[in-house]
Length: 291
Image (cartoon, rainbow, N blue to C red; front, side, top):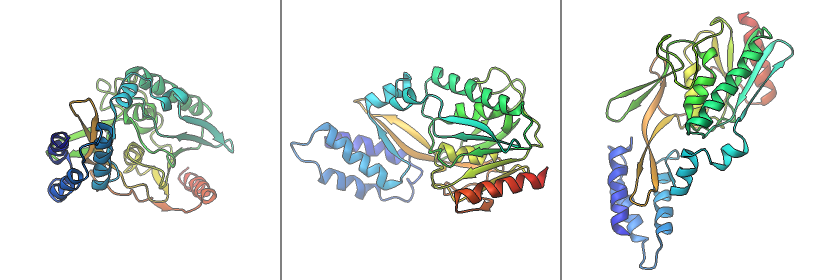
């Protein structure tokens, strides 16, 4: 069991964004001290999960079964609610779209999600709204690409966010960089009028990939983030497999907006509002001011 722990920490040190500052050696020794002769493999994995959570609250561990469920579209959360979003008109003037987190990493679930979300946007767009309200207050993350693709007609062309990795490489996030280069989940590239005001609602329930979506909207002068600070996990993860197919995911990168502004912490709203009613009132007022 000690060898298993040593192997895990070798990779955690290598991939973690905190590798230059965190006392990994003392944390590893603490885990080793907790191991007894009668300990089970499941107990060791639980100790490792406690350890990676102590490093930062975004890191986690997936069992072999949980990973296989995600990879094959059999995750219980996805099966129960494959389309965790909704849309409607508010006051016959504002197009409102709410998106919760989505963990469907398999291609079929992701494609169905993208197509369905785009259909919601197209239907609302046909009602000629004065502006859009995108509610991310309960979006705790998941798989970002179908969410980005689904919101693509609103995000428009160009790179909208970046991921800065510990090895100095940079990843780009976009719906479409050009007519020829776009997220493959989308069958075609199209965008709504880029002058349409977009109010993005955020709060402490906005985390991980939900924060990436907020960053993807930030930096557009026709967009405002309204609400309260987000969860503070605007970071990327790197997963690696152990010999028993357990996957350990550690914080590996920092997410930024299109201007490469971001520090991995909570995203601050442009317009701070503490209560739900006030959030919508400020969103309405902001859209009305821009029309």
